[in-house]
Image (tube, rainbow, N blue to C red; front, side, top):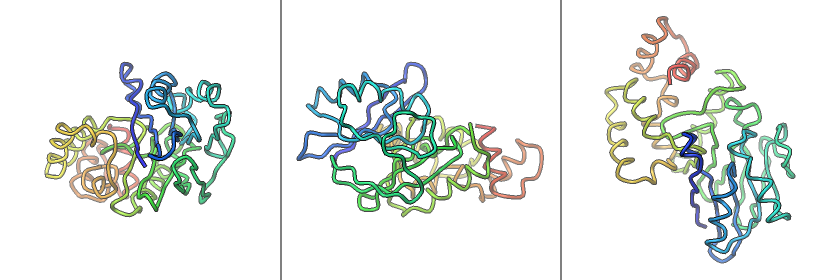
Length: 256
């Protein structure tokens, strides 16, 4: 199975990454979070692909606006997405623990509910392929904005992804990796892994589109809320003591 990103919205600073999975032996693709139709259609035409299924992590327009155009072109496509969602295009609603088979790429996914960024947010985890599409729950060295849930909800969702096997590849919905790493360096100045990862990202753009659970444990401040240096930096920023990791998480989200 091949997984490729289609960048979109970079001119407006959205830095979306639309993921396209395709099987080498079939001419069909699975699309993850098609917020923009034109670059997807161009990619599909270039590679002579049709669409089998569409996976939606949450309802925000920059993850769903391309769906109507894709359905006009490929009306038989299944649209998977969260059960309790404002998105009206979902044909196969999903909730925690549900399992689906993406037929075009012969891959099973398990649904992980991760509310916080939005209340309807879900992630798609494949144990067999060791990968997870995390939408806006996790970014490279960062986390999505806290728009609909509260900090405790988002922290609980983040821990679900943190607990996946260390080699799991994480494919996220936006590319803010370098900006996030510069912020991480500010809150944890003595973490040498951050400096190393900055150089890797500068040299190899692949690192700006995906990561691993193992790497995020080393460099992502939102995953390292129990670290004394990060806690102290957040207490200086908040000008108060922070008793729990979730309080550090909430402060990081406000600060970043």
